[in-house]
Image (tube, rainbow, N blue to C red; front, top):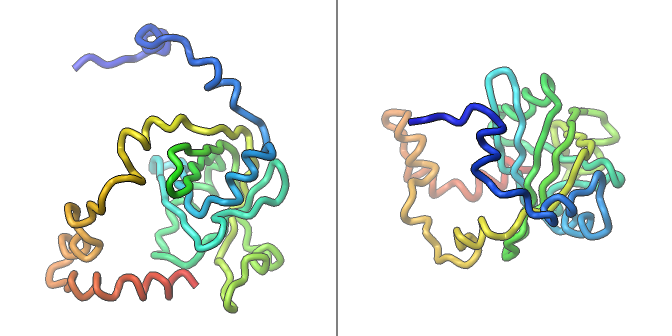
Length: 200
């Protein structure tokens, strides 16, 4: 297999970027980008650290982030499995990328920027629900924001496909593969309830 090892070699394989793909980029939230972010309840967060890269899905029953101002968004970290891979990366390298999705819409809105973590009491209290608060909040400074062309989601028929979950392993199946004697069926039966309990 031959490897592409230079930008020049790579660029020779592609036409020039479509002008609108560059013109749609903003350095802060515009009214329309703000509207999108305020609706989105799901985001994929990508970070980088000494061990490599990490991408983590984050979801909420309300907007997944809080807009602090045109250049700043806050992402709460609700209780999960405590691996904190994303958070470890942010502490050591603040670079961050986010992909916001809205069910049924084939566009994706992307943010690239810098992140810092806080456990400031006033910031945590902003997200309080049912007496629970996130452990930390990621404060993201926006460098650029733009929407992604719909082709990827359209090709995959992500929102219009039938339920294909029966074709893939369950969470219990994955754990059972690594842990002898684990009751994956019982885990899967309890998963929806335990998931809700962990979030709040």
